[in-house]
Image 1 (tube, rainbow, N blue to C red):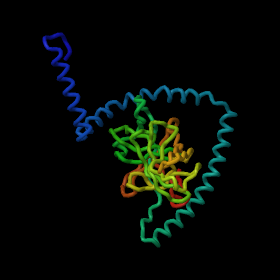
Image 2 (cartoon, rainbow, N blue to C red):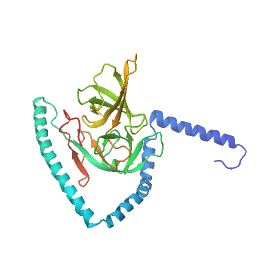
Image 3 (cartoon, helix red, strand yellow):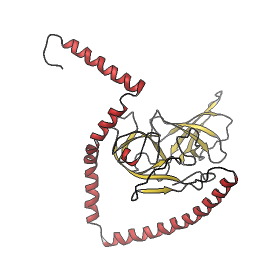
Length: 295
């Protein structure tokens, strides 16, 4: 295209026009979604190769674990198992009680969300875009809009899928917003990402609102995108400016946006999805109505 010729400027203008047309077609009409999915499918081996050194280092480290370390790890796992078994018994009772209340209210009896485990295999190199790539895609019935969690709280949502991988937009991205509610009193607000993985912003909060530092914010379920009751953030700083109608509030994400490698992708309750036996688990959400958290 740029070989020596009589009209190199014309070729440059032509390339710029074609690029602008493709950008407009994708941004305005989403005509290139299938092309992007196909390209992402073709790039899946690249993500696997990029993640290979980490897997290899883990494999080598496992070869040289001492007996003492293994015994210590075994004891720790036994302790955690006992704790989780106690919690499971408690959650089972709460789930049964919640189901009974839902039956009395003639509402849905489903209290568990079906999830599938995914692993982070890539991170977006763009410093202004907070995205990660996971190793589950259309072959695992994933689709754009599904919520993604780690063991601590809400991570973000799936925005694009290929056959073997998916892109996840993190809640810290400046284009992301989550409807949340305060666990302590049920007040509902919007939590925005601002490009900082350590802080989020709670917007349009009146200066008379009953909100305090340390309040837990969970997903409210409004809009139908994120299931209700998952931990999102904790209020960390409140600033009241004299004469201003709204407060400036920052919140710290509960999810480890920069560290988590194993994630959970949540399927909507109405979807009848066949889970992958080895990697599908069911997320406990029996305490959604009062405790403000699952997972």
